[in-house]
Length: 467
Ligand code: FAD
Image (cartoon, rainbow, N blue to C red; front, side, top):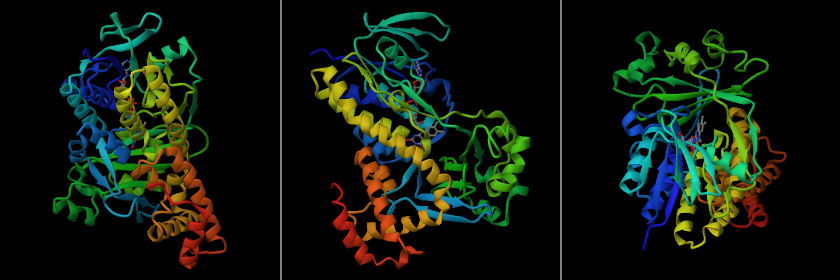
């Protein structure tokens, strides 16, 4: 029997994993990518040098037998290390133990590993091919070479994994409106770097850092955490890289009163701001001024579509269908979960139009839910993590989860460490939050809540979590 052909546009994280899983299921895959092959030309990043990978993403990698190879390159993050203005730190663990951790992975390293896997699975790859137009009436896609020469390729079925600015989505939308809505965030981001400890200049080292360096440690700050400097309306975060550095991301309002990217447009203005608000991080960033001036301010937005497909002809996945803000560390994970659901669905289906519709029906409520939770998590990370009310709820939630694990699981854990649908996590999280508010009413401390009575109320109020 002849293999069914599918064209995939975009060989980023989602496109290359989807290509692999479909090729492994007997499809004939052509994968088109606008950038050069990063395995030959080096990875051309553009944004977020590293990413938090969690269970949903790992499951999809496991389906392609790639989980161990990816985890071998990753750095485990056990929780959030919260930094106050005075340099004090407080570790908030993500889960119950090391089975519930996030993994910091290099975008470039992961993309190259996925491309290797796609090549091994028999995917035909076409680099430096930018999709410029799609004619759905004649099943034709137009690509531009690196020198701008245009050519047309026949494509019966096409899947767009070409990211938030998807050219395939634009072409589909021109053919039949998809109900597109983009909500830009009024905050932007800028990437900075804490280099490996050995690269910090001696004069910048505290006695403690010098002792750690001399003992051969690679990382300037704790490597097993996602670091957060919450500052109310804005924040810095830092994720570790395997070679010992940290990618630091500053999130600030784009405009408006200080602090905003408008009030700290360059290093000269940003340095005093960092001296006040992020002094411990600044002490570990010897190239701060050069990085601040060289790196652009990135934009963030949430993309909503009413429709992700054109019957059986074209489908969008990953950021092309549902780009979200990065504050839950779930954009790639959600894209990988798309792939884990879509690949078996297509392999088992004889009617692609039906399969595409089924995929959208299943995934769209979940995409909308993680979009909402990602926006909510920005407030949690930049503000709530030091808010006494939040901390009381977190503490009581942890006690309930320990005493009644079948009935209570903090929403972050549901989203990050389970496969419960995102829409369920959102709804259950709201119900649990209301219950915590009710149980804490009149209590200044979580400890003073009668835990036996609280467990009884919990079990009477909420059904058990799905197995
Ligand atoms: P992309 O990664 O954007 O890949 C699209 C691919 O398509 C690219 O290779 C591109 O070159 C190619 N392409 C584009 N246009 C064309 C064209 N016209 N023709 C051919 N090829 C084309 N997610 C997490 O899960 N965890 C995190 O910690 C996390 N952190 C983030 C931090 C930041 C600052 C940002 C911005 C995002 C973060 N994300 C995170 C989200 C994550 O980056 C995205 O969800 C993920 O990259 C989506 O993968 P994708 O393959 O759908 O799109």
